[in-house]
Image (cartoon, rainbow, N blue to C red; front, side, top):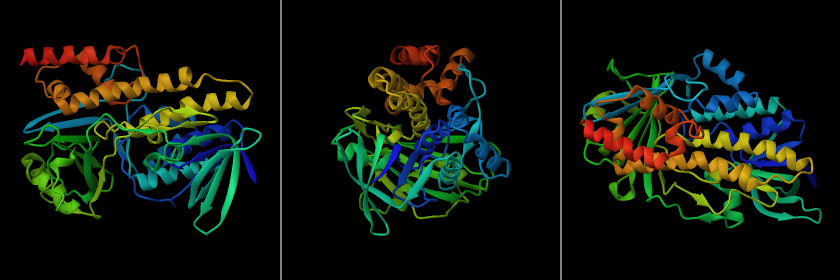
Length: 413
C-alpha cells in the first residue's frame, strides 16, 4: 500500500492550491481526480481575493503568463442591469486591502493550468481515479479504497485527507455528512456563446448580472472571455422553468422575456449544448473530522450569483494547509476554532448577501440612484471576495448593516 503525508481528492482550484502549498512545505502529497483534464466547469468569473491565495501557492506566475498571451480576460468589477437601469462596481475602488483585479476564465483551461503548475511545485496527480470508501488502519491513518479507469482496484493510505471534490462531495456522501441547504431549490441553465455584442455600453472587463424583467428572483450571468465568447446562464427557482422544455429552450425563453438582454445578445450563437444544474446548494454537518477536512464546494456551496465559489475554495485551502502541517508535526490544532469558525464567517457574509439578493433587499441597494462613495467601497470589497475582512462594517454586522442600508436607499428614492 502506497503511503502519503496527505491525499487530496479533486484537482480543481482548491485541490491544486492546497497540494502546491503542501508540496512546497516538503510533504509527499497525492491528488486523485475522477475526471481527465481539461474538462468543462462553471464558476468562470474569479474574484480579486483569489489572487492572494494563488500567489501564496506559487500558482500566480503561470496564470499571469497565460493572461499575458491573451488566454484570460482581465476583470476589474461587476456590472448590473435591471430593466434599463445600469450600474457597476469597480473592484479597484474598495474598502479592503488586496488585489482589485483578476480574470474571467474558461475553467477547462484554467483548472488544467493550475493543476499543471501545482505538479511543477511537487504535487503528484492521478487522473481517472475514483474514491469508493474510506477507513482507518491500526495506526489511525486514513485508508482509501480506489478504482481507476483502467479497471484496477487498490488502496492508499495517508496521515491526513483533504476533500476538494467540489460538487462530487466525496466525503460528505461516504461519511453521511450532508444536511439539506436552507436555500430553495434553484435551477441553472447555461452554455458558452459567440456573443457578437456591438453595444458600446457593454464592458468586457466586468461580469454582467441582469435581473429578469418579470421576476426579481430570476437572473442571468454574462461572463465575457478574451476570444469574443461569453458564458451565459440563467438562474431561478425550479418552478420558473418548464420541465417539459429542453434546457436550451428554457434558457433562451427567459432571455427573450428580458428585452435589454435580448437586444444585447441579438447576434449571439450557442457554442455548445445548454446544460442544467438543479438543487446545487449544499451544506454539511461539519467541515472537519478524524484526519480529514473539507475544502470549498465539497463542504458548502451557496449560489453562483456573486461568483464566490472559487474564492471560498481557495480560502479554505489556504486556511487548512497550515493546520495540516501542524497536525503532521504532532500538534493538535483546534479545527473548529481555527478552521471551521473563521471560514464560515466569510461564507455567512456571502450567505446574507445572496439571501438579500433574492428577496430584493440587496437589489434595492445595488439599483439605488443615490450612492455614498464610502459605503460603495465597502460593498465593492465584499463583491470582490473580501468577505472575511471584519474591519468592514458590512462583514462585522452584515445583516443589520445591510437592512439599514436598504432602508436608507429606499428613503433616498
